[in-house]
Amino acid sequence: LSSNTFSSLNSLNVLIDLSRNNLIQLEKNCFNGMRRIEKIDLQNNNIGRIIQKNLFQNFSQLNLIVLRHNKIVELEDDC
Image 1 (tube, one colour):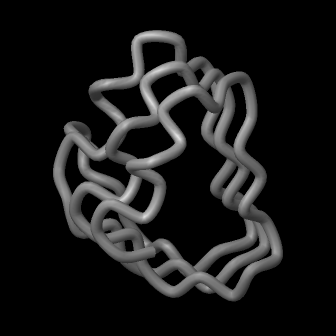
Image 2 (tube, rainbow, N blue to C red):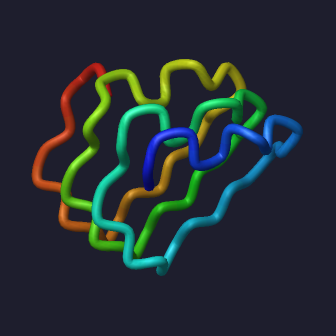
Image 3 (cartoon, rainbow, N blue to C red):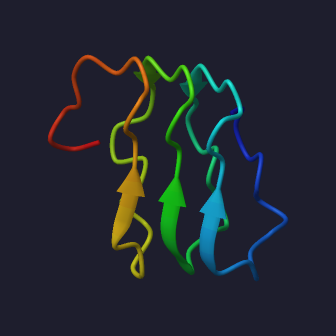
């Protein structure tokens, strides 16, 4: 996902389901403007990298990120 992919969807809330989309990496600011999201489903992709530290930090309502069945080897604490 490239930068600012979802910046115009600031009223979207609750769940974003990006599972099974063959995503390879999450770039800096790809979720900008989506502060109301509670759940992000990224399972069953090919994600091997999360480029931005603190990528999910600005989501005050976020309580679940599903990353299973990807190619991520390591996640840093401040991801």
